[in-house]
Length: 105
Image 1 (cartoon, rainbow, N blue to C red):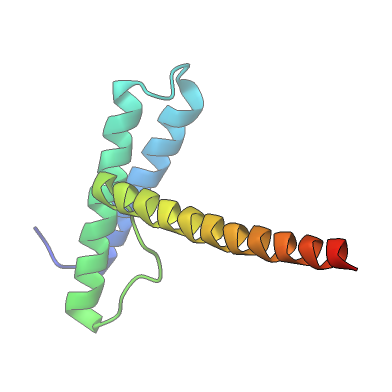
Image 2: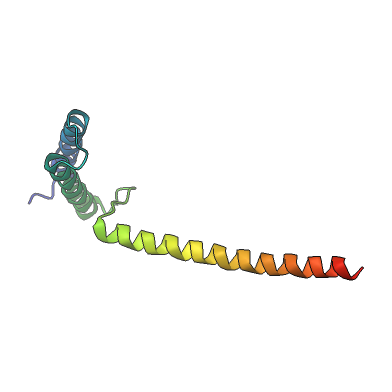
C-alpha cells in the first residue's frame, strides 16, 4: 500500500463517487453492491487518514463508525435514557410531596 496522501485521497473520492452511483441506482438499500461500495468507502477513508497522518501528522476531521462502534453508541444512548428515567422518578417524588403539602392546608 502506498502512503501517498494524494493518491489515497483520489481513491477515497473515487470510492465515494462509486458508492453514490450504486446507491442512486439500486432498488434495495441492503443490496450486496451497496454494502460492498460502503466497505470500499470505509477502507479508502482509513487509507487516506493513515496516509495523511503518516506524511503530515494531520488527522482527517471526520470519524468513521463501523459495526462495533454502532453497538457502543447504542449502549451510550441507552445509558442516557436510563439517566433521564431516574431524573423523572425524582421529579415525580417531588410532585407527590408538593401535592401532600397542598392537602395539609
